[in-house]
Image 1 (cartoon, helix red, strand yellow):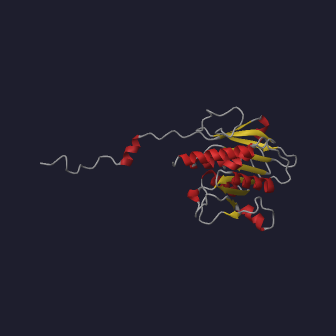
Image 2: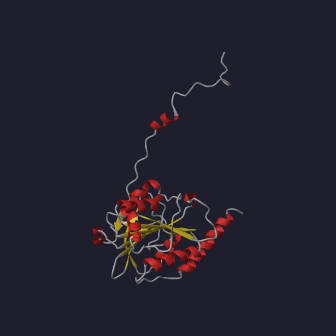
Image 3: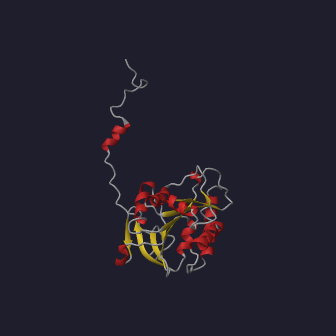
Length: 267
């Protein structure tokens, strides 16, 4: 007589992947979309430069530019509006698009203040570049992700690298002024993923001069100074702009608070 306790049970009638066939697939997420602040804005924009900020220091500096006007917002349906303030704030989970007031050329600034999943990155990149917004040049500001960097990132050193589309690099090689000067190219073997990669790929596809600047670390006064210097020296040269408040002191306090929280996790 068979021992029902110790004998190997017969194989299941269903494989694990077969069981998943009985589970209905989740409904598709609604597409992201742009909300414009005025009817005239729906006609679209053709800025000479589009700056897309995702790193903490770039978001903080560009948020405090007082000479900018809100023209649109990008809405990602899965990101809730709950907790957002009436006036734009760095604490919000939002993606606001601004025009930097300048008499000679239009510069637009996008502040991406929420995480975009890899599967949604290309849809967001398509909205920001090449449809309603057709820029001559694009600058993307992101942080180096340690998991994607080939080599060791020093915790007490501030560094930045750049990647360029073939058109941007071709113009630089031909003697035209590079948008971001004095930075080494991102080391071979290191990768960039997510929204930053999708945006740079979009520039390459649409034959737009694009530059991706990645900095390390994401917090700290030195990296804020580096990004500010890069923008003031290279990007905003000859452009009138103003900043509001003591944003540098505020960023320093934020960095110290974040460092204290991180250190508490390991004590």
